Image (cartoon, rainbow, N blue to C red; front, side):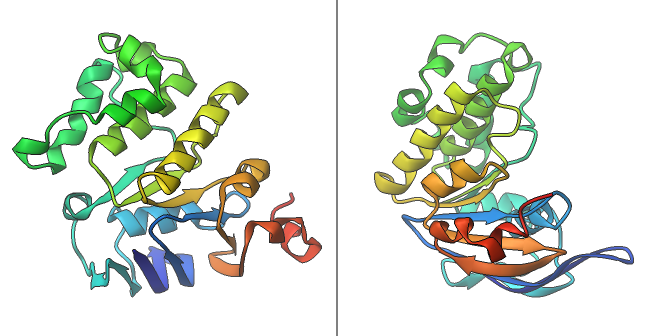
Length: 231
């Protein structure tokens, strides 16, 4: 579904990514881990088109994305849930969900039923403003908005950050459903090791802008892997 090859990214003179390569498969959960500041968010934003790579390539469904804009990648089936959620605080829950219609053909502009099945609280709060929701409810809204786009690839940047444990479990169940029932490729950046260990089919560990380990989730318990994840 997704193939990143030898991705390099600079911010001026600073280098954020150093020859990063990874893949994400349909019906699989791929998790990217690492300490703060190692380039995980830069990698995700490069994949969805918010940052332009210095060199290297990103291919989606076998097609090179080149310098295509973020909105073109969204139309092709890539949805992004950014770190910090970035919902529209003055719009209602309903209006936030409908903002996902922008990448869809007119005939497809409706909220899929599984959004409310996965996150029932959103149905109950359709008329509430996004800014009035709790942090966990805003995260559910951000994921729901992404699912409105009918993505083939869902990119999640630290969805458990600052979220209460009960909602973390709800988000975990939703990700399981998207993998097992919807067949979506899920690319997940995470700091919460137990969450990743329970969900991931494949794990990539980053350090200083590079991939330093690739393997199954069970590898997270190995000393040579944990050294890149502890402060």
